[in-house]
Length: 184
Image 1 (cartoon, rainbow, N blue to C red):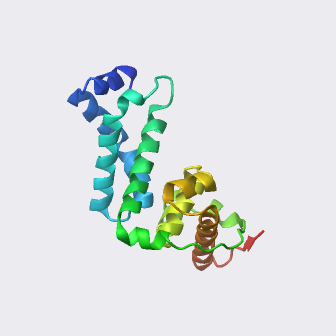
Image 2 (cartoon, rainbow, N blue to C red):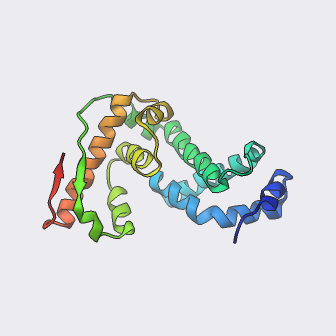
């Protein structure tokens, strides 16, 4: 299915048919985004549905001509981050405020991996480092933006990115022992 301006206008008019079309069209993409942040299936679906409710409530703020999918993606990511901040098990983890130097990982082994294999490895790292890694490396947020959205310092954001890279590197070395991965 393809979403066009009339579908978006229908959502603005509260048309359930248009809302259903938008939901069904973007569900797979948006669910994959939420799953990068939320591990459990039921919890991820709940967060995704909350995100779509926000999309439909804020649809009048969408500016035609911009990417509707990109606009939805930002709302869904922010909903997942709001969910993480609101739950105690994540709040306790986000309170860590250590600063470590940032290293760059050179990884020629990734050329041999599928996206699913890489995402499976990323899914196994510590929760906060995973969130920071996803926001920085996949969703393109700056450390300043990450710090603001998660309520942590820029230094803590950098530390978690470094930690994520170290964890990913260690897991890649286990999976691909013949590939040399070095810090730069």
